[in-house]
Length: 440
Ligand SMILES: [Zn+2]
Image 1 (cartoon, rainbow, N blue to C red):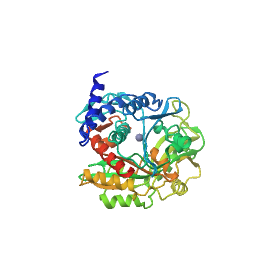
Image 2: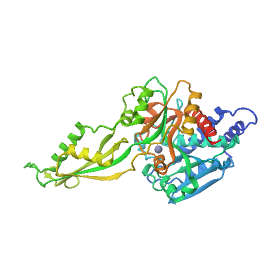
Image 3: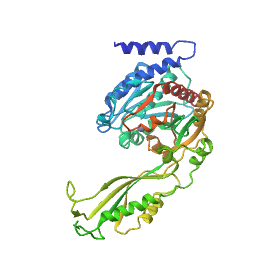
Image 4: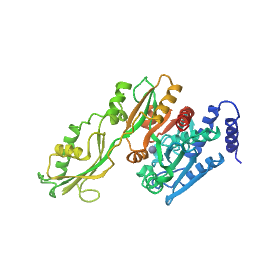
């Protein structure tokens, strides 16, 4: 038995002390240790093998006497499902999180991306925020329901999935398609929103609970022209056509339709701070992510190519269909030599209502701990596994009830990802209280 194991067991005993209130400080210390162990297991996707992480998490649950069901959707694609049984008078609440992380370029990191080093109250490493830290908060709120023998009317489920960072085909989606009967939840809670004192607007503590996502629409613009000698310019140069078309798109952004969730957010919070996150949740966006052209590798400088292509990652707020968006793009491109193809389109967004018992329980637990907080429904700029449950009528929220600085949110997928360690304890406690309230 290692020194670390002794500490974890000692903490577990302290938390289980009969009679008194749980020692939430000890719970946080335990969660921080578990998160360090979890972050140190490299689950970069690709390749996306999460076997070791799943073994590690199954071990934590089994030491609590919680049974774990294991599924395998592909090589190294392990899915864990743990269940706390309720009396069955309500449908389940499902806590969902992903074990895989995006790859890192260690040469760009000033710390070991899998070191889980703690400095100045922050734990650094890939996945600390997206989303191993959130997964560990879910894990401990779940464990505390078990340790404290909280009576449950509904089942509370905890699901760890692989594959989220590459679209979820062998993760959440596979589970929905192959084993929905094992889940069949009324509510899903996944990543998405969070609390922050500076991200939404400086000086106000805002907790955003995600109720919707934007529609993902990937477009390819392909300009076809005539190849020729670079010494003799021609009007059919596809590069010129593509560049002018992209210029028109950049100069004339497509406005978003009015969206109720954004309006509510602005009413509750006031003007949102100027940053890329807030910009992306208030408007539909378009990023030019690839430009491809030229003849030969490396491309010949003196050859006019016959084809040039651009890829556009568009994220469209609810209220506009793919067809309407493409029509707006086509009108701006205004060039018959350019073909516009939709290469991927996500489902039309479904908005989860915010007047449900679970939402209200999350909101009141937050306000009990932070009386000065503003709680608001929000839309998130990115996609999460939670969204796939919405078309099935599941009330799906994205929320980590901890307080994190803007730098932490903007660090996701970057080379300085961190989570403040003191965000974990309160998040676990708030989540525990909201689950106890909704599942009783
Ligand atoms: Zn994530």
